[in-house]
Amino acid sequence: MKKFVLAPFLAALAMFLWGFVYWGAPHLLPYKALQRVSDDGATAEAIGKLFPATGAYLLPSPLLGEQKMNELALRGPSVEVHITKEGYGGAEMGKIMAIGFAHNFVIALLLAIMLTGLSKAFKFWTCRVKFCAFLGLLVMIGELSPAIWWHHSLGWTFANAFYVFVLLTIAGLVLAKFVTPKEPAAEA
Image: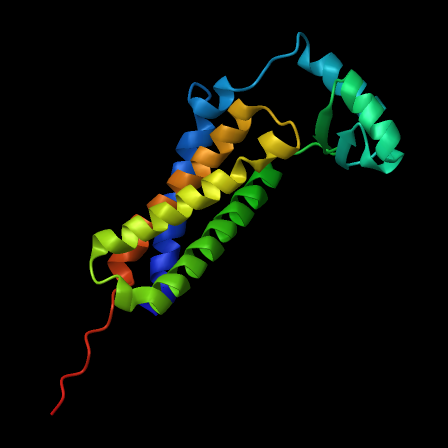
């Protein structure tokens, strides 16, 4: 029970707090990677007219065919837009926070299951934490792929990837206290 409910809950809580600090403080790393437009309201209105529905748009679009897409890609600019036509805030933020916490819980639960399966190899707390941190580093490196393949800003992509690295390391710090190897039964 402690391993698969309490430990993931506490790890999810620690991860949630990390997210609250990291994403809630505009002077920290992630927001330093963003660019500003001269008028957010007018720009949002213009974008709302250009993109007809909620969803993801990639320009130049691969749906144009390879030749046209390559022609437009050479000319530039390229952009990936994720647009939500409906506003959000207020009570909606509570729902978003709850879904985010549940997401963290699932990540922590999966890490706990992994650590349980590998626990014989992780006799010491530090070994278990290092495993989670290394896993976080691996995922962080994988998270850099949008900057390589989709032309996302390296600064913004790195800010997101760094967040995931620290997130998994924090989960490991908590989970490693609960997910410990069982001592072999003494033979009679």
